[in-house]
Image (cartoon, rainbow, N blue to C red; front, top):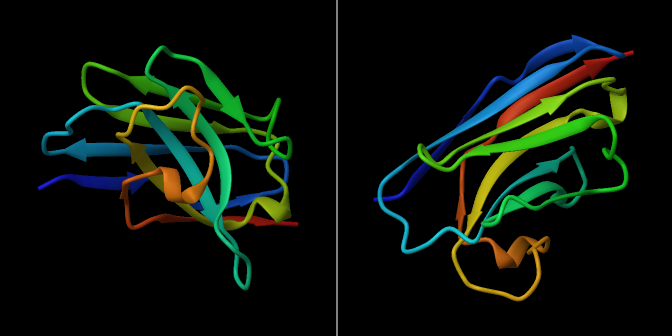
Length: 125
């Protein structure tokens, strides 16, 4: 039984930082990418960042330069360092794993096969 569990969310003032973590358990057939998504109230789930099997990273324009994604391949854990946070970064943050091989780094929601339950990150102004 594959599980993903996020942690590290909380309340922070604008300009502050949060570090999210995602722990996995169970056996994956393969891991082609691990990513972070977020969903704000009343909005659709949106891509934040991902790291491919070769270590390549890709970020949404809205977080580029402020967020850093990293993966421990030995432990299959994922982190997201979020700096210079803005109120518009407030959302539930989800960790996800993509197992299907593609020629591109997956960023669409339906390209990810396993999801965590999410952790709330709130940025006050």
